[in-house]
Image (cartoon, rainbow, N blue to C red; front, side):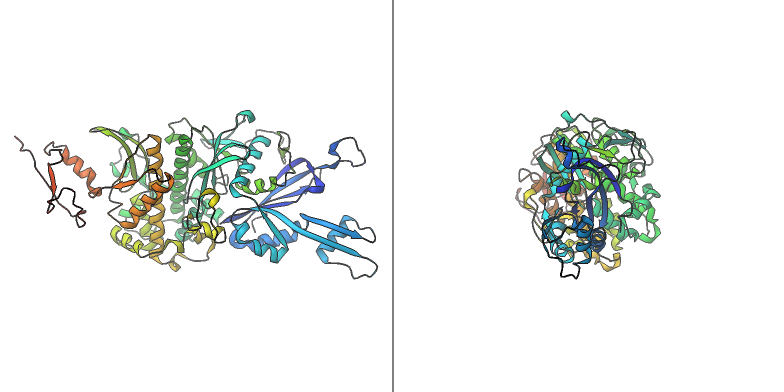
Length: 620
């Protein structure tokens, strides 16, 4: 059980008689719980009848987490603290009086064997719950504890929880720079709009315009479930926290390909990349003749964390830019106050925004959904003085514990007129490098062919896996949509060797291709570009790769954009270098395809091995 280190918030002036003490956020990887306990420090004197506060007590909100795969531990925790007995609606008829203690004894131990007492007890236990597990595990809670889960919308709960914390808890929000937390004093009158990036098993990006006013505008399946799932397979680490700690001891440069590794130790300053910038996550695994076991698990974990955190930061900034949002808050249990995670996300936002945007975090980042579900009881006052942090006398303390290898995206305005506007280190080198480590496949083409035989649904967590086979149509996600790449590896007690290499390769290809398509569309939207061409040897005319990229562009653009490909996709750089001789005429009739007498004929067998015949000017 992970409830040993329970976090607390002190709650002032909460109506005791109506409080239901517990709310749950049951995700694909973790269960988050918020429950209320009357304060040990203060209670209202009910003998005084001078104000509406006669029915109010102070109390504490407790925050606890469990792994979803160990849901029995959560049920045992609820039972041991009788939390399921505190949220019930009761109709009682007594022939003599019983105190509260006696009532709780009855609920816990059963009715006393006495003919002198007549008790009629009618109750229904309703607990607010959100997340897909509120649907998936509803029968289990009913069977084991007699609890009916009152389901609350997941996105709405996240927003309600975030709004409450940002408005009611001082020192809740902070930035992270140079290893330091810098707490932000927010103007509650200028809080909206903002972008909420919730990083759970997958990632949701929500544009928040006010209380109850929000829209999920984007997301990615490359989130906490991917880090934990892939991390388990690559390192054999058994818990998320152990994996985070392992990454803290690692060095990603051992396995990531840097710009300097490609350019002989030099920067590529023309497009703003230093020699230490990551060109390709896991890219060195492509060229090094090493098996997975020859890399330190710490280095692998560090590279994985860096790859996912940087990717989330980039996509978040692009969406904030898309809607003109100045404030970006990151939440979800992926972060966990981990310094390197926050540093990587912060650097990504700073880099891609050229210093114009800052990533902000929340101290209770992982409990937004559970707290939002709790808020649906409408028992907690939302005011700047409603909550104080337990043990916190200082409102601003520093709380330490809380190319084919990569992708370059350019805007092309004409011959010789272009600008590199974005990119990602999660490209072909990542596919090949991670693919070699995970499957022991020896060539890129073999890995592609292997993926063609695989089924990613064996290892990817789908929306239906979280929502008990149901769609989440309110935000446009079908049950077959991928919620978390490699997410099933989190809950399944399997080693890497127990998964088919073909399924692993398919999931990896799907994850990377979808990510590239999404980032490409966001950048096209950013600059108002209507045509998006994909090139590079990662594609290789592979049907599933092109289909995944095309579907990603179509989905995120809502059908307004199309991905386009080139038959000679992998030779753009070599051909461009050749064009510098200025020997080839660039005209519609200067080039013909060998064996092609029709200029518009689709020649299926002309790919990487094809030939183009050209008229070339003589040197003189």
